[in-house]
Image (cartoon, rainbow, N blue to C red; front, side):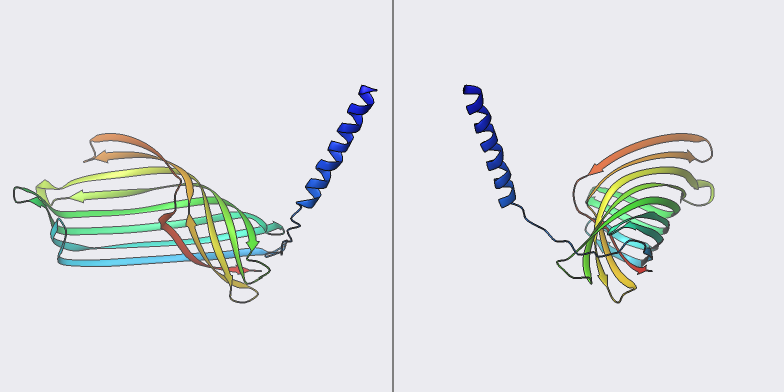
Length: 243
């Protein structure tokens, strides 16, 4: 008798639990933002240049020189399932710094002088990406996407300081590994093109650098870092085409 009562209680409990689950069913409806079978191709380009002539800022005085940075990054992605795609991104960056003179003045007795500094670097990156899109409400013009990235890259740079018999130089080669998550916003201008804004919020990076000084001294350094915040320096603006 007790066994029958226990079985009935368990059955009633299961029915009540199922009913409670049905009552809280949200019935979320999703709108397809990027349909299966589309190809996504895009690119982003950035360029910045600055020139200083006897510039002063905080502890920097008599700063004279110029710099520029150039970056180009094409991307291709295939939507293998509604709102899900996989692809690759490539990037090339080049930066140049020419510093003729600069004084770092901390106080009246502490001052550091620098002059004749030249640095040139260029790097290449290849990135495997996975994207998941989500429409903003029922809109097919505005939507969000989350991008998982696995990046491998490397490059080289040279740093020279001084002139004549006092010239000294460093040559570096580096290797980079980065894993990160970069959400973004896609705004369709028409059926085939969209503007994208993307920012990194989570990632892990590892860098291995080999330095040769004056073709004699060799040094190596390794660094690892993880970030769990919005990186304002990783904001990217680009144009994408959906075909």
